[in-house]
Amino acid sequence: MAAEHGGVRERESLGAELEGLDALDAPRVEPEPWLARAWRAAAPKLVAGSLALAAWQLVAWSGWRPDYVLPGPLRVVTQLAAMLATAAFWSAVATTLGRVAAGFAAATAIGTAIGVAVSRSATARRAFGSFLTGLQSMPSIAWFPFAILVFGLSEAAILFVVVLGAAPSIANGLLTGIDHIPPLLLRAGRVLGARGFASVWHVVLPAALPGYVGGLKQGWAFAWRSLMAGELLVIIANRPSIGTQLHFARELSDAPRLIATMLVVLAIGVVVDELLFGLLEQRIRRRRGLIDAGAA
Amino acid sequence: MAQALERENAQPAIRIRAISQTYHDGRSTLQALDRVSLDVAEGEFVCLLGASGCGKSTLLNLIAGLYHVTSGTLDVGGRRVALMFQEPALFPWLTVAENVEMGMRFRGVARQERQATARELLRLVHLDAFGDRRPHELSGGMRQRVALARALSQQADVLLMDEPFGALDAMTRDILHDELEAIWSRTGLTVLFVTHNVREAVRLGDRVVLLSSRPGRVVADVPIGIPRPRNVEAPAVSQLAASITDRLRQEVRRHGR
Image (cartoon, rainbow over all chains, first blue to last red; front, top):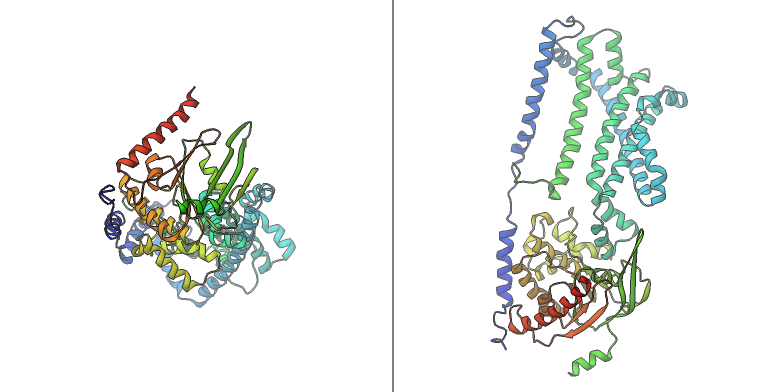
């Protein structure tokens, strides 16, 4: 018998052979230390930032506008440093960040619920799909007159517009993510017994995560923009915010203060985008093997 | 012989009677299956062989309950059915071990037990050292073994396999044949294995069922008497494979005219 079917492997040698092949196929790769990774990510940005500063300095030196209208970087940075040392500044930042956090959280909850609901039915999709895209492309500043009419000069007016600015992007991002799920994964889920809520929670949402995070990122950008517009338009007494700082700096023609505050607005936007969403996206792509490690 | 008789008398694990399936694709109509009847006995390993367009995958999807039967009857006697696809279809956001746990999660198995079972199954497919890896870090053959472990985690009575080793290199495929055969003989699973590779069918099956193309129809049912374990290069396997290939060629030629 054994001679007739010569070459049949023993179980043990089969295991050894498999393990040999596997070790060749899937070598363990040591991850780069985080400090080196952080530096590799930060260095090009520092270069780009320096170039922008240099260009600004050149324009200031050229005398295109007088110094009290367009101060150079040095005067602005000095002003910024002085501002950072005041409690009033930090209380304004806290107000603004609190508003954007509340607005973004509400927009995430609403946008996600709408996205999941709309994705479940083709009819809902046809009914609300283009409506959502329309809302998304509507400039949020156009909502303010209406918001002020309805809610008065209040926090509610600001929150309303921030949510309207961000939620459609989040819903659309989720829908895009769901549209791009390979049907095979959904079938694999069904074969394994995924039904109803379990299917949404364990298969659909994780599979749609890359698109969803893209939507969150865009939603954040819209929320931040809407909030800045809102804080310039809806000025509430005794509630200093970054927007009111901008407003008063312009009223007082205090150019260094105006530009310093703008730098703060830019910095917050970049930090949240890069550190929160950038790292989240990176992590998702690395885990799913969407980054080509060998690429030049 | 006595065993064979016993099998015939017992209720088959899969009982298919005169199933026809037609697709309507806009203007055109395609008949994928034409009155296919097939019995697969409990614990039997049946290979379903056919050229392209014979509706092999359609049949598996019907048995797995992914498609609705429109004509004919299908009965698995309440058995649990697992399906393995041509591609691994692993969830890329989960580790290898979490992928294997997924089916148990849907069945409400407790975490501890889930993890223990997943470890055991990964050992069975010789991947216990890779439980914490992500699917993309593995080779195609390894991923397909994870998919096998995931299918086994369903503790199904019937395992449907849709050309699971089609995309693998010959050496890996060879090893996986041995592995699948060993698992099958240990667990007493009923396996319905779809392939277009004749040697693979003869290497693995108790029976090879030949389907015609467009529409799919059972044209031959060949019992494989070669004792196990078999080697894909053994002369007996080659001879039988050659004669079945001839039959398959006739089927394909019929469509050339």
